[in-house]
Amino acid sequence: MSRMLLGWKGSYISCDSQSRSGVRDHSVFSIHSFYDVNAGFSIFTVWFKSSILDSVVSEVNPEKVLELGTYCGYSTVRIVRLLPPGARLITLEFNADYAAIARQVIAWAGLEDKIQLVEGASEDWIPRMKEHFGIETFDFVFLDHWKDRYLPDTKLMEDCGLLRKGTVLLADNVICPGVPDYLEYVRNSLSYKSCYFKSHLEYTKAEDGLEKSVFLG
Image (tube, rainbow, N blue to C red; front, side, top):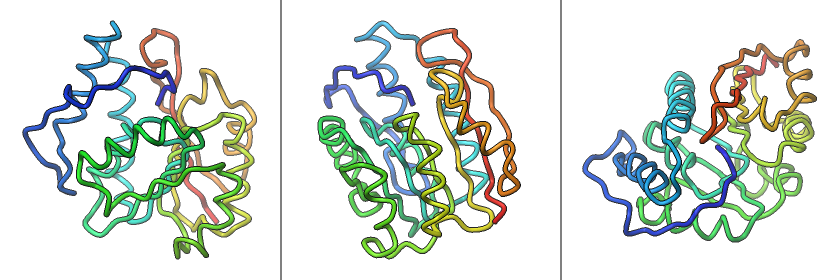
């Protein structure tokens, strides 16, 4: 989701219910409320985009997930709450300040055993996934990091054998700020079947969207 750095106060988060993974489900609503009250942003565009993410994750029902770009952990928690028992999520974040916030969110939600947050550059960690984490392939990959890394990191995952037939890649912000090289690749490659979900850039009326690409092997 959008990498707009906002203030954070854990006391603004509350919960009433739990999801299938035991995550405090109401926290996602409370985070939106905090942004809306303290930053003056409408939650609608964020919520609409997040519903697309929810839908794709629920459809794939993945057991092994890679998130490129943790930011403050919102999408991370949102994904994990929909995963089946025993699933693993590895999330990579380059920015140490964002990672520190995300760790607080993950700890508050009680998800340390379900999420592995790794600090560092994606191009450094992707080749180490199999050896360091014992991951053979991922079922679902969420791309939401530096836009100029979408295409090279996708090709790197291919080269490292981290994608299997049927692996789903979901890329955010493909229109604004945009990733034309990535879209050209996944839409024209015989190795992918892609579709576009139209939405809006967070907190604006500008068009944005997510691209879902299924790796065909």
